[in-house]
Length: 60
Length: 493
Image 1 (cartoon, each protein chain N blue to C red):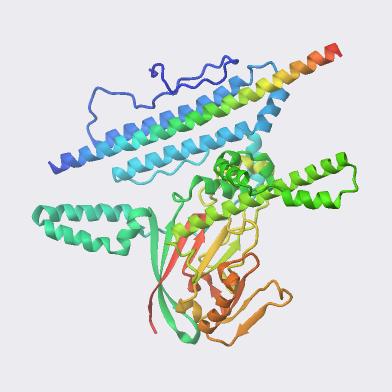
Image 2: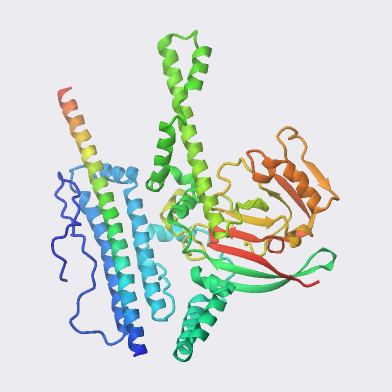
């Protein structure tokens, strides 16, 4: 019985460790998303600048 | 592979760009209908899941970054410029490292739970290093390593054995078991095992002046898991100060500091009124427009300096608080003399920035080489204590030595003591041939010197070249993730 209980406790602990890992990994993936989102936004701004420059050149 | 379906945690990247964001999976193991046979097989499955999910997270982010480059039809050099100026690659690299650390520590926890040995991260393979970096690595001097420290005290094993012992006792006699545990809880080993993963304990005899012998117990703690991420990051910033301009990641971690600063700022921490008034008075002959421009310019510079100084103050406090915490509050004990010795601020080059993430040279051969101080063998014939006023003095690259003024081991070796005073800076006064209590009394009169004021500092000369270990109570070596506690066991003679 004791052996069974010990196994059960360990299995529960393993689950907890994994849940904690999943939670942290999800958080880090959100941060990855944010970085890529920021990169895209920076590209967008640069692209707008480029277009404006082209427009001004063609009208100037 | 079967993916999780639509998920609330999915993030929109940018409305204007058609990025297909992979759904943020709830990272779950593949569900099997068959019950695993043993706890070992469950553990193995979990470890495999950790490897799979962490690998996916890293790989997908890299792919998405590559895809994102094509969204706007910018010339490739422009795209690379945006990428480089924003430090996006480096930011992702930091997250990658954190994911790897998370995976490693999770696997270690799993293995510890089932009583197997720890996980060590595989060294990067040759293939994983791009050619140019590999060449660079060849040119780089190899980092020195600290002499290996054998961890003679396995806290996991200790606690497991204790649990087994109690389990046996409980069957026959609960009171006995309770007594064993109550007694055990009072022991040092139990206390250590509670919160420090690995520690070595060594007993040593020290022969001091006049052949006095003292037995000390040196406890060496591995605190690599204890150092908070922001302190590690601050460490990197200091250590690689020369490339700070390119390293923008710390901003994210300084957000708390910025908030604190903003609060102080809004409450009048810096208003520039005095400076403005002074300048208006001094520059009243200038035409109004140019005077105003000049004043604004000066105020901007002053404001930037104020912010920087304030941030430094906050960081100093953060580091001091942390050191105080791990030294059982010895750091803020006024009886503790504190000396900070520098690991030099490195000669790391900008190209080494990619290796930023390898913070601890003893763990990664690819880390930039830095001067290594070995706290276990270092000696000194005199030390400056409690010297304040130096910018970023208590940064994590310094080894901190704490000596208890009342410790006989320390007192016996002091030959002279002096203090620095701003008023008579031309001469540091030394008091010799007095007993340590008399010296302490004199020093106590200089409150700023004792407490590490802005200009204070105490120089203590020793009778001979002393090992730090022989005179100190604590040595904090964050650089190598080591903490040494030197406790006097008993005076032998």
